[in-house]
Structure formats: structure tokens, C-alpha cells
Picture: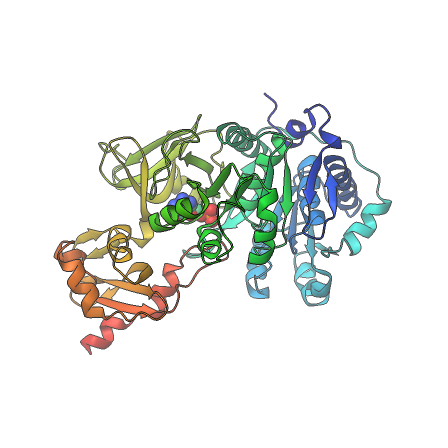
Length: 506
Ligand code: AMP
């Protein structure tokens, strides 16, 4: 099998004439349009001095041209390094200093502000705007298209900085083999075919939108309705034309909040996929009732791409992420000893397989610590498998609360709180406590117009959870802090309420 995404796309007979991208304003791009532009952009990057293996950092808004830049890097053997447009210059300073890109592509209006940063690391600054304007496309229009470098399986295709919710981000290196293998497996498992139209409202600076959604579409020769961002009205308007959607849980909760969502608008749909953060079982049920579709929840991370999925045929069980994908070896181990645990016990998820990344950019020590000697990657996620083999994620290892010497898995407490009348969602986290080491703490969002007293929550939980798992404090909040992918930022909660118990003690 070829292990290079571009050749996987191009080997499909007649694919160049097929539609790849349509934007909400009705502009259409065939595979030929996008691949030809990718070739010219690659030419422009090479003409600007970039060489095979060099990093190309891009802090740009989502657009077909920005997407073509990614493909241009892949075909030229350049390493694509997308950066969240929300990053500040202080954050960029760290990423650029670490990655040392040859070229830094920015939004035209940011060129002046970011030029000193680029100069500081010797990168050439180029611009690309959402209307296809800027110095990069201008250079591309005159550039000669270079020969396809045809990178190999182990060559680095992209670096994505990750783990912004827990400490300093690290650059996860993904190889061409990782991307190709993930796209092929997902296209097959989720039955993607040429007639599929994916509603693409995810960002493309993250693995979900770039690798999971877009690559899967392309290896199947399918097409995308390519939205600059998730906009409820635009999604509602385009849903009837789509056959599939991949989203983060907040897409689904926001759509459920719209009275226009019904079986009619989903009549053309065959598959809704959710991931990047836990989907509430309640959302799964409500979605099925309103749309007639059981959302397929899957699990993965930047470092491993997608490793488990609920079945396409068969029960898609709410609150679970299904089974390991073909080719993925997954085990649940005691985090301390690395010993495999019996089914039903909660432990660390470790994975090995063709989609697992080779390591973090310039982090040899961390790479030693985060891989076992037999090649399994220690994901940092805790989970258990039920009697039927379905995987239940209970949260990040770092989010585990140790109170009075006992392990409290936040998900277990959150599930109980979420089941209480009037509760929308909750987040359970640990905060330093003078007696218990950490105090179990819950932030709870209640439905508009509802009042929920701390004492009521505690009373209700008392009958359902062992005493040591009970929150010491329940704080009613209007919403939970989330990052761009909809993940709850427990580090922000821990920081905000960091002296909750110290204040009590004092
Ligand atoms: P990222 O690298 O940004 O994609 O984040 C990966 C992390 O998101 C994983 O390590 C999990 O903690 C979390 N995650 C992804 N998918 C799910 C899911 N379906 N349920 C629960 N957590 C998830």
C-alpha cells in the first residue's frame, strides 16, 4: 500500500474532475483546482528558500487556499505546522522558537505585527488571506510547480502543538504513514464513498478538522461543504445537502438548542460523528430522538489520531467510545507498573499501531518517558472496558482527584451530577485542601431559570456515591471554560478556585 496521502488521493481514477470543496457562498473547487493550487503554493515556498523537511508555520484563517497550503506542504515534503489564530504573540514566540520554521504564513493584517517575531528566528514571513490574497498566492501565481517529492511513510508531514489544557504545549510530529493509515482506516470503517458530502465546520489547525475529517473525505474521493467556522444558521441551511458531519460535542448541543433541528433537515444524512471531548449521554439520547440518528462517538488524540470508534453497524453506546480500530493495539494498564489490568478495571490507555506518532519535536526525554519500551504510547487518558468490550473514558490522568488518599474519577461524579434534574453539565476537579490533600470540587451549569442549591446537589449525591467521592464544594456557574475544540479546561477551574479551601481553613 502506498503510504503517502497525496498519492492515495490521486490514484483514484477520475478524481481530479470531482468536486472537493464548496464554500457557503457557493464557490466550488474540484480536486484538480485544489491540487494544482497546492502545487503552485509548494513552488512558492520552495522559491522562498524552504527545503524538504523544513517547517512551514501557518497562523491563518480557514479557507480553501489555506487548505491547499497544507496539501502543498505534503507533496513537497515540507512539514505543515498550523497554529490556532487565537494564539497571542507571546504564545507564537514559544512555538516559533521551538519549531524554527523556514516560512511563517500569516493573515495579511498581522504581517506588520508579526514580522519582528519571524525575523527573530530567521523565518521568511508571507501572507495569505481568506479571499486568496497575499504575498504567498501572489508568488504562487508565478511559481513553477515542482516535481512531487513523494515523501515516504516515516517522513514527517506535520507538527501540531498539543496539550494546551495541561502545561506547556509540545509539538507532536505526525508522519505521512500516520496520516495515510488513519484516513484509509476511517474511510473504510465509516463507509466513506465518492457520493459523500461532509459538512466541515471544524477548524483546520487541529487534527480533528485536518486529518480526521478532511483526509478521510479525500481518500474516498468525496467532497466537503467547507465552512469558515461553526455558524448555526449556515449549518442549518447546509445540513439537508450533507450526508455526514464530524463535530465536537458543542456542535451537537448548539444544534439541539435550535428548534429547526428535526428529522427533515437530517433526511439526507447517513452519519454524525463526535469526538475531541466527551459527548454527554444525554446529548446522545436527545440527538437520536430529534434527528433519528445515533451519533457515532470515537476517541483519539493528536498524537495517535483516531484509535477507537463505536461501530458503524451495531450499537453505538452513549457514553462510550467503542472498540479499537483495525490495526490499533490498545491495552489498559496500571499506570505505575504498566501491567495489563483485568477487564472492568480502570487504568491508563496505551496504544500502538500505524497511526501512533513517532514522538514530540525535540523532546527526547519526554519521548522516553511517554513511550513504553515495547512501543506503546502512554496516552494519559484513563478508561475501563465493559463486559461487551466498549471503552469508557473516565478522564485525563492529570485530572484524577486524590482526596484523603483515595482516587476519585471525575467522570463518575460528573455523571451523577448530570443526571440531577435541572443540571445541564458539570465539571469535577481537585483543589488543594488542608486536610484531604485535594478536595473534590464541582462546577455545575444549571438550566436557565432553574435554581439549584449546593445542599440539594450534595443530598442527592449522598445516596449514590461513597463519601470520599462527594464534592466538598459545589459551585454553580453560568458556563464551563472551554478551549477551541470544546474541551473543558480543568486547569482553568483549578486555577480559578485554587484557594477555595485555603480560604475556608484560614
Ligand atoms: P487532542 O489532542 O486535542 O485531540 O485531545 C485529545 C484528548 O481529547 C484525548 O486525550 C482525550 O482526553 C480527549 N478526547 C478525545 N475524544 C474523546 C471522547 N470521545 N471522549 C472523551 N475524551 C475524548
